[in-house]
Amino acid sequence: MPILRSAFIALSRNRAIRRFSEHSRAGTKLSSRFVAGLTIEDALRTTEAVNRQGMHATLDSLGESVTSPDQAHKAAEIYHRLLDEIAAHKLDSNISVKLTQMGLELDPALAESIAEKLAEHAAATGNFLRIDMEDSSLTQVTLDIVRRLHARPDLRGHIGIVIQSYLYRSKDDIAQLIAEGIRVRLCKGAYKESESVAFPKKSDVDANYVALSGMLLSSPIYHGLATHDEAMIAAAKAYARQHNITPEHFEFQMLYGVRRDLQRKLVAEGYNVRVYVPFGTEWYPYFMRRLAERPANALFILKNLLR
Image (tube, rainbow, N blue to C red):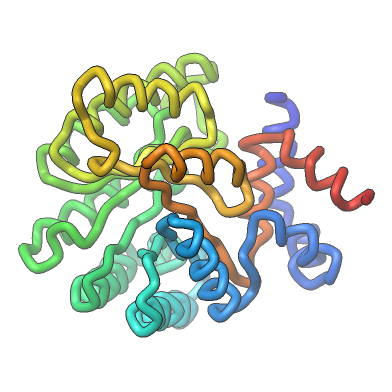
């Protein structure tokens, strides 16, 4: 499995395969398992369907490192439109943004300015902006930007962040974020990292996830536990029961197209569930990382294609 994971991560960076996949009918069909569609309208329809099943949503316009400020501003325009559409259609959804898509690698000040305007728009519409986490080289700058924006009284509670349990530093980061009242989405992490910064063994990543979940659940803030791992979910449930933490205090978060049975089961049990709904034409890197996280997904898709 580690070999397959590395192979899928390497493929996610292959520009030639990406170009072919994103512009072919077969590639688009292949991606439909995990990607809600190519347009805003596709994403809104999917969000409505998710809401009808009793689940919240997070909308993500797929795309990563931009090469010009103009591209960054155009990417941001999609999110501004999403916030307006969510409000107009009274959808139960927030938005999730990658700072590299907002120009972080071009100019951190540009990315912060764009994120600030999105956070202001989210606050004005009673919504919430989640800043996604990328590879470890961007962890500190991402944290710094979120903490500065959240420190503004009018943006407090309207912006949050993602923390990855495979990084050694995450315990200290979560302690700081809790102290500042910042909402966290906890995930395991989907980037290939050096052993100098990340746990190399899955068992250690899992153990850290459970420990960090406990920290989040014990805090007075509403957090999200992003996982499809039933062992991690069971551990969170057990911790909540032992510490008299009600299901309304937190949410489980899962990806569109992954473990739909488990999503429905958790809703039936009375837990809050949020589905991460990605869409857009630049779906290839995201799709390959989903296969890297769980290579069994590749077998599932292959079986469906063969049918």
